Image 1 (cartoon, rainbow, N blue to C red):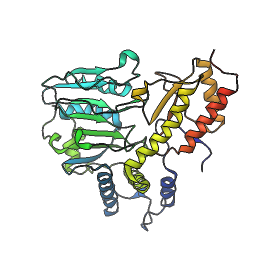
Image 2 (image 1 turned 90 degrees about the vertical axis):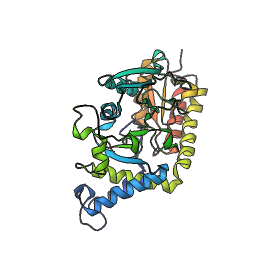
Image 3 (image 1 turned 30 degrees about the vertical axis):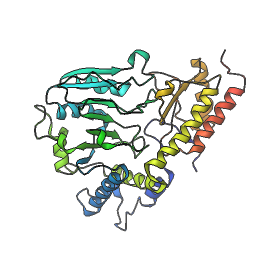
Image 4 (image 1 turned 180 degrees about the vertical axis):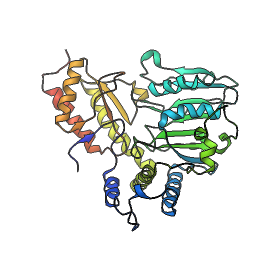
Length: 364
């Protein structure tokens, strides 16, 4: 047991059993006499790692055979460019703006074509998920883009948008493997692994084979073409080998707990502990609308910036770290990713209650 609870939004907490197993194998992976970090990506030993990781992910997520799984570099932000470069055939796309990262993707996509805002909650500081049951989609649109879980604002889609038959592209970075999902509802799913799966430095993209074209936008660099990576099975160049190894271990850990249904159950229990307290508190209040709340990122604050700052300061002394909210909305943010134990959430709530009951910082 470590002496702090890490509520960072990412890079984030990883399962202790996984970290311990990786530590045990650090100097000698399976009798090779080498660390995984030293093994050639062209070796049969690493090939078995990447193959097993992909297969375990396919089983865990029930990924259909007509979808490819790619292990990519460049962070999620690079996907903001790769997606329009690879998918735009008519030069049009529709974006749903629900937060900072969706808006960044939208701004980047505007470099490559005509981008329509299909729905947005920006007018209310992204505090809710807009109604996406009947989106106005351009009939020539190549795809519809969404960000499922909004890390900064603490909101999440709880149902799939109606894209009217258009390809739906979903950034799942901060909800990756937190609950079951129907892969077939989406043309593409992608996410950085630094929140729920592994250290920072890897993106996993899952996409239907029909979206991988020989032709892309003119002057698209070779490294930014999905087909190149698909044809080479994610080994066109040296991949982030250690990250892929860690993803494989985290997937096995999730399997050992009972899979994604069990993961969702655990995450709902954790989030309920914190949301129930927020709903009853006279000092702290949540920032996301109740119907749009995220299980992964809980945003909250008091009515005073000074009290927020004092709470964050005192929390760290109680072993509660990385609780400060994003500068876009201030306050506090508790990221309750898969590896955060329920004991950590209860420890946070116990301290919040102690802080509130001290009498020194009650809302005026």
